[in-house]
Image 1 (cartoon, rainbow, N blue to C red):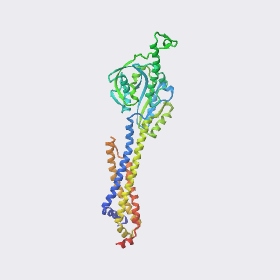
Image 2: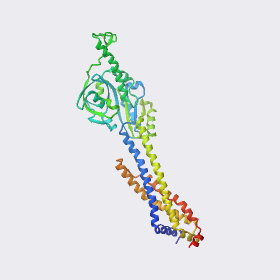
Image 3: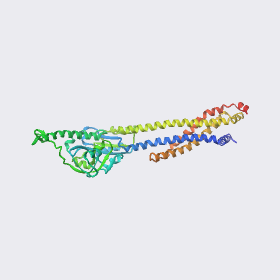
Image 4: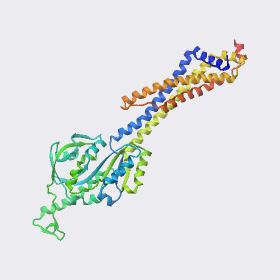
Length: 441
């Protein structure tokens, strides 16, 4: 029999003569591999799932006109296509455009947003809408607006538009994530100025025509704040988010164009990009570095910081648990190999007395440990994948495919841990003095 044949025969006998010890070593490696593979698979898949889930709670990127002149004109369709192309270059993205105008309802100032209902609905799946989204001749109003007007689904409201209410807002349109608040404030300011005019109307009678063509009474400009003329719309739905959206009236972009008599671009375009951290920063930089788009981009801090914080917590937990599992696996395999060496002490002394070298004995134990690690890693990786798949389906409602690089890494790590854990007992085995062992016999 050749030396290789003798080596394999002795290795085979060593494994199967002490099956209970071998099973313990395999189980230790299996548990470690299963836990690590499951954690790693979930840690890789869950951030992607969480990122997609967070996208349901609004945009993480907004785009506004870059200067005052472009704010007056808004973001046109060509600019939007250019920005969308940059955003979608390496990531999937959803978008919705908003055109804000100040309007009057029952002489009170409100903000109306001209939107594509389908795009806004797709982008903001967390919105709680009672009734239907806006359509031609129908508007969706925020909960605060509905409470103020006493309106319900099916009610009819008259919305009036005056260019004077939108002079300041058209020159300095919304420019950040609080777009709706900015637009509403502009309308509020205009209405307060008009309220002063209303007071003069009530105190005077008889009007005259001023030099600037405006109607005056007793030398003061007359106001039409009590004018309730406008376009009648039906309330098709009420949105309740608990945020700024509750103070806005939503209509189709075509209805807003007809109401104002002017067609212009969007004040804000919101994007929900499947990117976070450095990837999202790269998207923003690519938009801001392109002067042809005429827009500036910025991240929605509230959303992006939540993403980063949650992912960091998850990764920290993964590393802590991984270190604990690695230590336990190392101790389990090392203890088992030490027990095997102790049981075979007499056999090792006899073999060395018959001429076996310390290198040959050390190699045998090392290969034996590697076999335990390989079998345990193979079983553990399969079990870990099954557990990770069940977790992702039941908890995160996400299908999980097998990650082959991760599987190979899990198997290699199991073998490596088993081999490293066997080093101390193998060193003791190679230093056994055959004379002492034989005297004890």
